[in-house]
Image 1 (cartoon, each protein chain N blue to C red):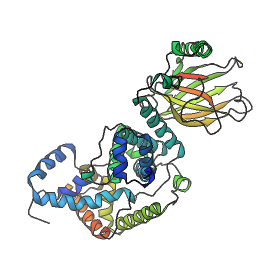
Image 2 (image 1 turned 90 degrees about the horizontal axis):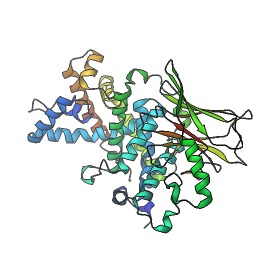
Image 3 (image 1 turned 30 degrees about the horizontal axis):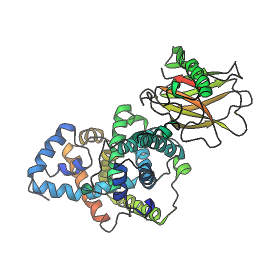
Image 4 (image 1 turned 180 degrees about the vertical axis):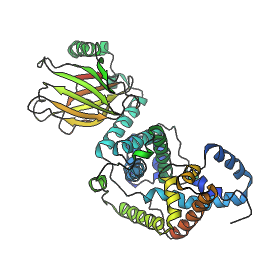
Length: 190
Length: 236
């Protein structure tokens, strides 16, 4: 069986043994989601590239081990990208600069759909965006500020001039509602 | 869900929005609270889907080239080279004395000449740092190169540079310590006036880059340098 036919989890076994070709497949399968998340969080192309580079090299160098018991490879990859992006945001303190993002990047770099798996992933992404948009505005706001903005609950509370308890409650209720909306959405195969 | 005074923290926890102290305290609480464990498990399903809410964008191809060049190089370095394989070791890893007679002379002189004086600080004013780079182009004695760092951005400025032969291009490389150079993702040819002003990247020092190199490469660039550098610039 060729590498292209292997599941992510099996490729990761090879990556652990230093197989660069297996790592290349992992990169090709998840780089779009990783770059998209990094760009959504940092708002700058160069920062997003740095975050993705740091994240993938840390995966390759096994500083951060994949444990299949804790979820899919994609969840693991995106978790590392998310953590690195938060580090980058805090390091560069670009919270107030993110509004001035690279103009028109969406148009220039919009991901293309080349395979059935990519089509399935785009559909899945649309469903997740729709679910987030369906939440009451005050719930989606706190979730987006926390997850994509890297802000803590107390920072969000002071930003929105709301009690911390209200912010935490909105996060929890919003996530519960999202979970219910996503109940029928299955993760695209790796 | 109710029955635990801490269950409201579950949402902030799975979003990574609890402060450090609160998070540690909640992790400790989670160990002994089944109500919160269930709550966290349920909310994680939604939190793990959130990355997909970002508009999907194609990463630039040069990012792939950069990352995979490092990966391939490190994979190759991890495998112990046989004496035959040793001959294939790229020039930046090779001890100069181990090279064949002609390349040893040429490369030793080139690297020595390039190494000495590379990174002479020219100016540092108004937040702009300019560093002179060493240039090794025997047919172009007036060719000059500078590394300019300004406002978190680094550029390479070249003057009186000859166009590389045929359809070859100049490729920019980043080198960390003594490790193999990795592509910066920048290919260029100077203009008819011999000038080029190319972006190398953000804050190179912060990214651990010690030197910026330029070599002549085939069209489309290479994943690893195939010729000796014509420019060596130390990152100030």
